[in-house]
Image 1: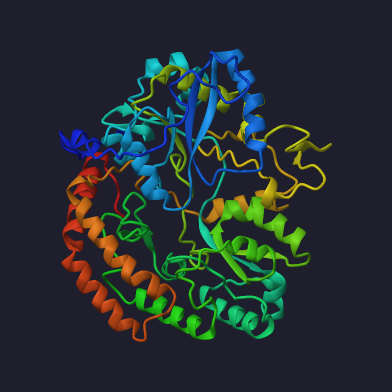
Image 2: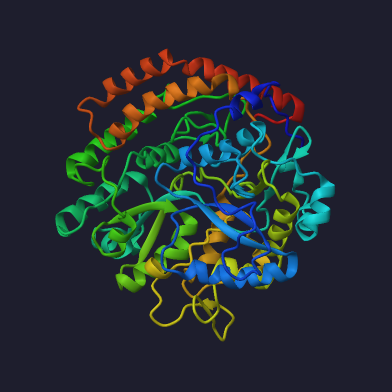
Length: 525
């Protein structure tokens, strides 16, 4: 399906003129290597998301991987990390700098601004000939599966999809089944969002050393979870205002953009529940400003809940909790569980682009083709060094050496833009029922309807920034139940959002949706 850019000419130059200064260049584009090469190989730098590991395992892995890359394509690989602190700003600043210090760029259309950065000139146009010559295995697989269309802007490919990897990144609560059972839930399973009130109250009354839900920062997970389970609203993933996703459609009317932030009573229901939880003492008083590691708190038995997505639950939480809190029976309640209002991952939830400023784009694609399609290179990058970072068990699973602790010993390469099911190994640390859970989710989840829709945000960027300012003032306070009168706070927020131009932005986006629906024959219900 063809993607059409609604951006008008002239935007690219204006945006690139905003390039930031003071950025520290990586090794991409020069003749230096970080181990394993001859010293004359070209260094290719890949931008990844996450906190850079400090345990030395990454460097050891790169030494071995680069020996292989040097022999096969005459290049070495280095990683540039955009760390989680202020990651959105740092990611976009790095891309807009367009200074040639990175060659390969991890991107995504639903959370890493892929379309916007393509429109702004951050990504190299990838012709079929360029891909076929320099990434032939990748080209063949994506072409065979018919997935190049989801990467095209105005009929031009701008990135490579991670389209052959099974995952679910729908969010929800992780909680302790042993505590839930003691709180009165059959089999330790919570099946309604409001029932966490009972669970949290029990934790508060019976586990004085633990917060019922130790949560950090100005997110709005509780609101998000409440809305998903109490409406048929579908978040438009391509539109953000800061950390927030302000626009939705309904499953009943997929051609009309709406927003619970401006309409209806569901936000008030969520805010009233959050106020009740705050009065119970579900989270610490200064949760908005807390920046501690709540995941480690969960592993230590110091919080009754944590929050992230299904993939984290299946590949990290179950194992770690069973090791560090034996008998805790970790469980997950995902947003929209009550009414099956959640989505499968899109094929461009992870994707790889080539920087428009890369000095060696052909070589960058050759490196990518190896790390995506060569099993030895794939295992090195994703799992590390066999015998040190992982082992293969007699039944063919990926396990870990004695004494291995995922909290401190993880490789941390964060290659989230080219994983392939054919090279993935079930891990001894995976939840035993992982594939049963995937099958259950497959049977209930929905396909995201707007994967090929690109919005023109250039005309409303300033409005979205203003909307972000209003939401950052109100939503964290609503999430943590800090307003004495949530109804008044929501009314005040809606007036300020309207003054910021919310309706104008909504109308602009609606026009984009209308045009796309007409071009594609999209069915609205």
